[in-house]
Image 1 (cartoon, rainbow, N blue to C red):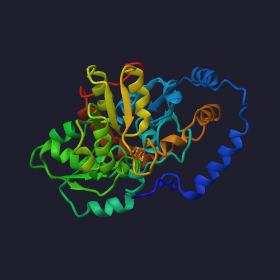
Image 2: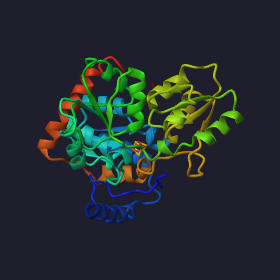
Image 3: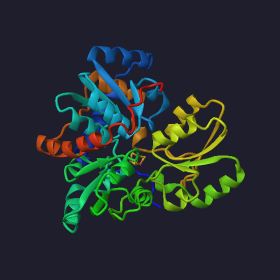
Image 4: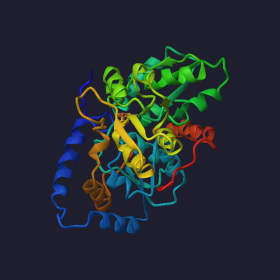
Length: 351
Ligand code: SF4
């Protein structure tokens, strides 16, 4: 099992990352400990005409300050629609990049540039491009958890919310390559009944859920419903009562008022919204191999309230990319948004 360590990402190589860390550590010391960070962030939001987008895997205190809280699809939809001048993305690098792909003229800020993603990092564009040469004539579908350079090599981007619907929209005889998550790819194969060529990537957070420990937990809570994200291993998904994207898991909890206990096999940040919308229910984290009680994404958790404040105060770090890559990446992202119309509404805070 892969240890949960943070690597320098291809998007933020070691030299830049070390420079960023040094810069960040100096700037963190400039924060007055008595400062009301929440109030300052709200003030800066108005001053900058900024929108704050936060993924479900962020700390609850960040989710509570955001204009939109959602999964990757909902946040990409929100980024495509915003008329704010500045997008502050509380998520990981590939999500902020997607916002920049859609908004080349806006300032896109990410509180910590080291907030990468194990899936995106394990699918470098040069290797992926070489691998794709083996599959001419295939439609290249890529999970949104990939770098802008990998998106630029794709025909269509998908998220876990829309992958099944989008694959179902393709002609049945069209061969497909799917990257970079093998577990999501396998789940999409099962749902659609079609075979795809899968890139062997995985998420270090979702792959660490342990099927044996999960079975023991189910015995301990026999009335609990097990809900799981499709990035989990097959042996975990085989035990699940419901499988879906982060948003689908939240909606499942909201629409099953008679169920009072849920075992949740995804990143623990989603529990903030689940507990908010179902205060009468008990949520139990699926046990990860690490021995911890809950699984937390070490990349997502690099963003803090302090760093959110700093990135808005100092207008950095900023997401940048070369225009050729952006234009090539825009086409498959736009195709996803077009093919998803009507599938999943943008979720506003409080929905
Ligand atoms: S939870 Fe997994 S897929 Fe999501 S950002 Fe973290 S490492 Fe990437």
